[in-house]
Length: 251
Image 1 (cartoon, helix red, strand yellow):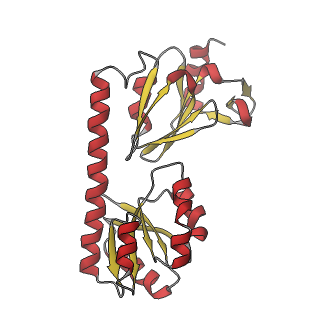
Image 2 (spheres, helix red, strand yellow):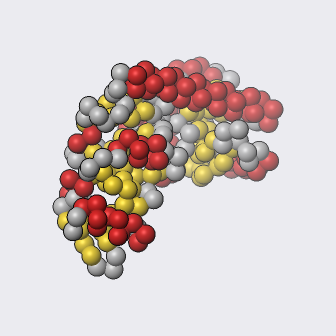
Image 3 (tube, one colour):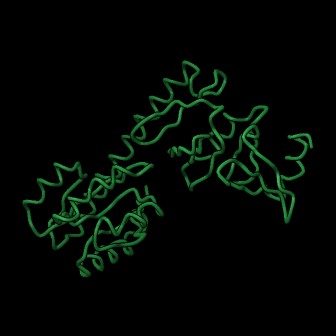
């Protein structure tokens, strides 16, 4: 069963309470990470929690602010629109929402909507995995030819391995940070990429970080080990990895 991290964007406290109650009773499929009155207010929450699902009251203000979603640098969440106005179902279709719910919410219908979201996410991931496997069959996902394929739920990006500054674990995702400060979020975990990047200039300095040692500006040995990169970025070397790291970089 897939657990959906979600955020509620609705100014009606009764709706927030109802969805929170539903999440408590169905904790295996739904987790509420936070709520906000408007889409613009919710952007910090969205960037922090990276939800897979957003419950949205499709008010005129929220729909006017929908462009903010396109500015996210990670996978765009799925939406369930919920309104007292049945005509808003058209807006759900127009804005690509996974489903529409008429208020007051019905828990049985809500479960159906959640399964639609889960099915949609799983179909997208399956499609991307299929594409990655096709790329792999041509040798493009490995770093042998200098490129690596980064798969998210809605696209695959081919990047030069030499452009990777470091990779960071983000729960079940991996964030790639490139030399130009660009960030790309992959739907795979860091462990799956670690084996692809193991060569003479990548090292896992920490449970959460794999770094390109060619991009390290200096190593600070004060109160532990820290790798410093351009743009003032500093990453810690885990204590249990310090001895191996020293041998790896031959200092």
